[in-house]
Length: 291
Image (cartoon, rainbow, N blue to C red; front, side):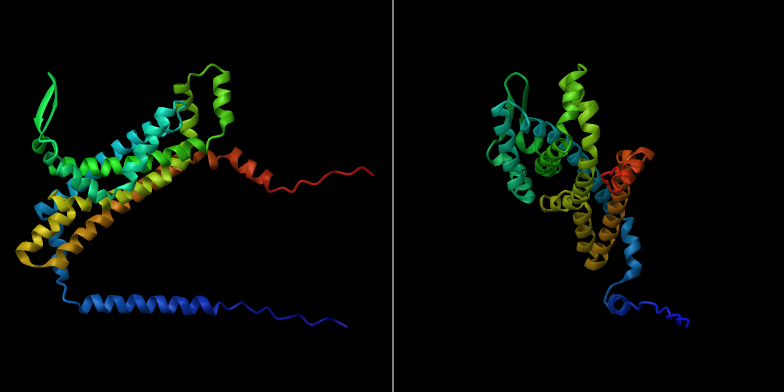
């Protein structure tokens, strides 16, 4: 007696369809609400190219790049001090991280901006002499606040990356006569970059947005530029939306750059040897028996 073939019934994912329908309905409702809102959408593209808005965009990018660059350099130095055999260097690095990571960024910016209240003059005998309120401009205060705060986080990111490299790599480099500096530059850092780059990219994106705090002390970045425009035409939402567009543009570009860097430093994980190693790790090991 032949067995009857069982029909093949496709699995229906009702939950997925319901979730998709709810999400689409919410998006449509949001679009309708924004369309009916009192926003002059036609004016938003015009505000993108106002001179003050373009100036704010340039200052935002320059401030973020300078602050992040200095933070990376300081972070590497502090991370190396944190791993030093010298207890004084270790305690200094730990205190540095504790201080600049513990204080809010906005507070640090305000402290630097008002430094002239404590030190009216900054001078080095026979070398340098300047008024503090001239030396520490609004842009400089924002730069110092952002860079020093970020350097504390970068120190921990770099330290985590260095710790991720097996100590046997360093011992092998020493065995062939490499100096500590050469070992760090040629052996440890290239391997640690795969751990360092992702959080650094995320921090840079946060830095681009964090420059908005500089508007408090009058730095002409995107938020301050939007406020300057809206103070004359009272189109607050329209100018803020123009600033939001520029933020999304620069963040998207930064995200693409981060992705490319991650691919560049992770190329060793995608090579033929790496794929073969992963395939071998997937093969179950069975003890052979002799009959």
